[in-house]
Length: 208
Image (cartoon, rainbow, N blue to C red; front, side):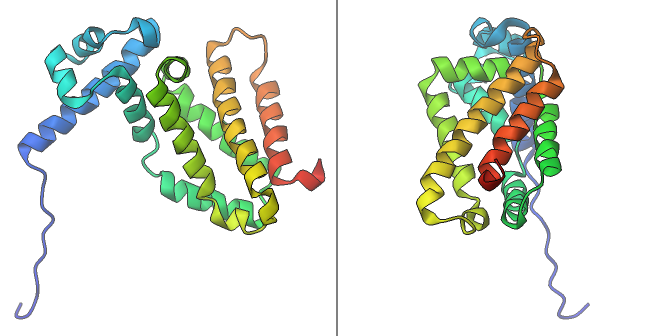
């Protein structure tokens, strides 16, 4: 048709598709290896073997296991920006206890589907400064992105609330890891109830 402008989306090259496929296999193999041997026990050779490639191929995609952990976190949160906007809207209008529980249960369900990842993440945070720094920055940036929520509370409380939220993020991940191990004697309901109480105290301090 005259005057019609045809637009086409450029397809990734076969070479790029192959790189993406190999990277995905390495990430999947890392989850498998961390689940079987733990973060410290799983070597680069173990991951490469599980992925069906060489050690050299691993290093074409990742510099270290620490970089793998960070890549896994990013892969599991592809829609983080949209999720934060939704969360910000809930907080600004006054999030309910039921909504807090739903979010905690959803977070647990997502991470529980990755056996070994939580314990590997915890160990990486303890032993790899770059992972600890990256996770701290990731969590702080996520909290600071809640602009509508912070507009509803006095500025003099912003620093305190941000610190409490970052601290609770760490505690929440630690609680998920404890539940994943299943050896603490603490039931799922009790653990989630406690987390709900703590988060509600941050969002609605006047109700505590």
